[in-house]
Image 1 (tube, rainbow over the protein chains, first blue to last red):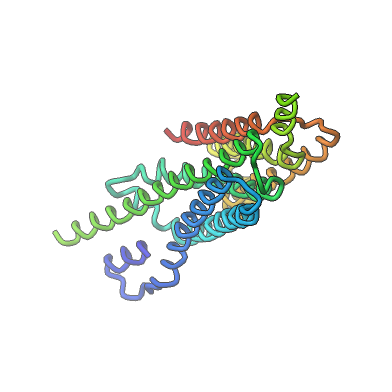
Image 2 (image 1 turned 120 degrees about the horizontal axis):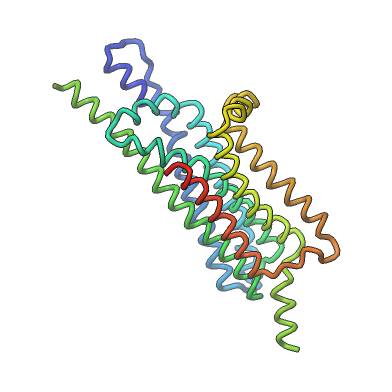
Length: 178
Length: 110
């Protein structure tokens, strides 16, 4: 999307702007990520209040966390491979190049650890749907806690990258206006 | 006797939970190490790019594959209570493994 806008600003009249489908893919990535974080929070709360009545909810929340995280990975990965590559130069030339040189590089590698943790949650939940034993509860709570902490951190990093792209476009528009 | 029972309950996390928990920790560290290899070795970068068309896709496949294979392998190796790790200890291993992987990744790019 950003690349196509730059292309138009440079005078091209034939650059197609397929905004809607691509932007929906981009929006799906953080949406599913946040849903995964919320599901992990649900797991954490169920684990802290473990009882037989909550066993089914804990399992459902763990499966939801894993499913949403995989969807975030697939949508984000698709966007990264097909659309983001053309945005890299724009960000590097803008006022926040560190968004690409540091934050995006850390994000795309750290996300794999987050994916593994989220995938591990259903293994825990189905083996221990009522985690009342201290050690088991510590394991469930810490795994869910890591998913929440890393997930929110990566959401924030995504916001930095998105802001960097907007700043780059704004700088480009300012230059064109002069 | 109560302390022994509580200790047993604490340790009863199960073979697959233990195996995949160890796999999460180990694979997180390998993820960081793989990143360093990919960024410092041109041969590794070229191979990873050629394997699937993009080095990041290859890394994802390697890491997810390793997680599954290591988890299943450790579960089979842990038959007969060989993998008797307590829940609290396993939690610490998962946390430190994830943190170590994150530090390797962030530290490399700083």
